[in-house]
Amino acid sequence: MKILITADWHLGKRLHMEDFSIDMEKFFQWLLVYIKENEVDYLLLAGDVFDQNNPSNEASKQYYDFLVKLSRLGCKAIITSGNHDSPSFLDTPSSLLQSLGITVVGKFPGHDHIEKILIPIEDKLGKNKAVIAAIPFLQDRYIRQVGENEGIKTIDAKIKEGMRKIFMEIGNETKRLYPKIPHIGMAHLHAQGTTISEAEREIQIGNELGIPSDALDQFDYLGLGHIHTGQPVIDGRIHYASSPISLGFSENNYKHKVIQLEITDGNIKQTFVPIPKFRSLYQLKGSMQEVEEQLSGTSCKYDLTALLDIYIDEPSYDANVMLKVENWKQEIKEKNLNIVNLKVNFRDKSGSRRLSTIQQNRVNELEPKAVFEKLIEERKDENEKAALLEIFNTILADATQQQP
Ligand SMILES: [Mn+2]
Image (cartoon, rainbow, N blue to C red; front, side):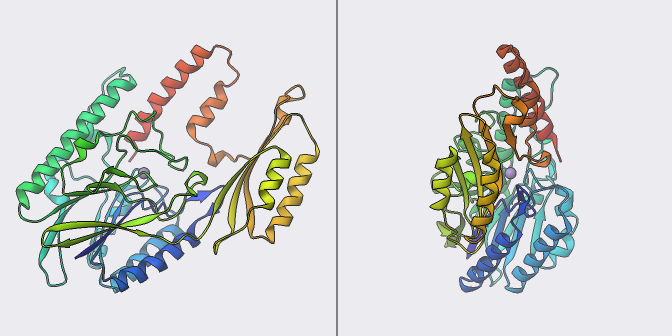
């Protein structure tokens, strides 16, 4: 029996107004061919199906169109929610999707109904080969009791303790109900010791909120979503599946993949299937001249237009910079390159400060933390700034943890 694990599709995601729907369409085409040729039995999607918790019509259509194609191949699926997803949006069509062989677990059914997230999976002959613990994104209310005036350390400790408890509950229930078949978990969380890329928009305070790996180690195998670069947490046993495509500039060099598990006679064999690359995301940094040189050496290597993020740093104000950039924009069109974000910094602030920094940021691309930092930027007292930022981070962590 063959299982593929994937995660972090972020359907509907935009990067500086460019959307990734064509990229995902190409990934789907590739994935469907792979599933067909390799006779994959199950596809597990471990959260962040959508980028927004109210997905656009286009993103929803892309999701359902894919699921129909998947079911036509006779491949079944189990889908769980991530922190970006609306659990109820995922759950609403669950009975309809169940008729296509697709099981959805958007909402956690609660500590007293853990059996509901345990899904025995069968091979084409109808024999139970494994059980999947389909753990959706766990909201704060299932993990900890919120107390008054709790600092970040207390919150962090409570989250770790709560997650350990819930994973043990799920692990024990799986062992009790399905003692004879392999146990495979899927979950969407931040495990300790993993590195986060810029595109992972969730607010994390350092690496403090990561869950210790031994707390997660309750299954024969655990496939994870949330970190877009598919790294191991415990080699061979707990692994991030990775997003199928690069969703941010810092992910450009990462080789995206899906995890394949083959179950034979109760043994699980893990392999990684590399996903072809469809687009480059390049970051160019330096003086005007340096960026110009980098630009002339940059080419579009894949099917889709390469997107560029450019940061120009010049000692003093130069009115010609923007003119030059406009020229570049025209020139690179032929090379199938597109500048989607541009920031110009003139270090000499003696002129008008506001005028000397040209930023093409749009409000909807700003992170809450960046907005707050901007707001307190002018304050002189560094200690006060640090304290304010810490309070803000605590509130933000609270707010994002409690989000549906
Ligand atoms: Mn996530």
